[in-house]
Image 1: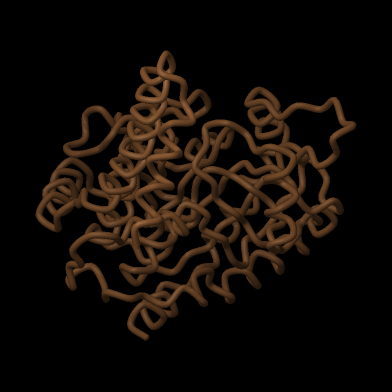
Image 2 (image 1 turned 30 degrees about the horizontal axis):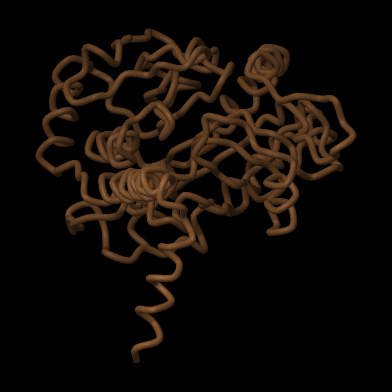
Length: 337
């Protein structure tokens, strides 16, 4: 019992008397880092968006548009042109919508567009929100709950992602069949905090997060359009960002089973499924992740946007054709099951 304090005292005496201040500063810096990390996780876990707040936003939008959307679309980096396909569009800037955060990333226009796509009433986000922008995770997923309250039953998400699977090529489309939520391992989950049963159950199932019938529909449409040669199925891993992944991180994620990596989508899917909406998500492989220490390649955002522009038209055609074939009656049945 008495040996332990002696060892602690001995460890203190390792610092010569002139370095005691250095030791104190070292301990202070370490404690500050631990406290700031704990504060981030706690702030992400304790912040909540109330049902009333979402209801206020939904009611404001319903008052200002005649469109009653059943399909919601989220445009990823460089893919905002999807929203330009909507007929008779009504456009709202995020900064004008009550309770909406602002999108600050280049390639994300920061607009909510209502209209019809192949006869289906839709709402389209031109730009999304990310953890690395400093928003609480419950805030960046607020649009999903607002859409649910507006009557949306199916969510279609797109993103730009780095290819971890070495068989993937830049410009491939990857249908997301499952995800790995890396921030979730650290307790950063949009469902943390008090659960409101009006949105969904406390412990929602995620084994069916990505609707299998919509995945099959995407394959059928791609075959008809001649897109099958660059269409893949894979697992998407989300990280916090904004820094791109290190070589070691890419290797780890690939060994965990991830085929692509990005900084979005998963949090939206979790909240949308919690609220009972069907989800389909697709990644545009905008760059190949650097997996070799001898490589001189570097991931950059300009490459992401450039690839998005090159493949935007095919993405538009694929998504719009899928939307046209979504059966509203089947949609209703799936949401009630």
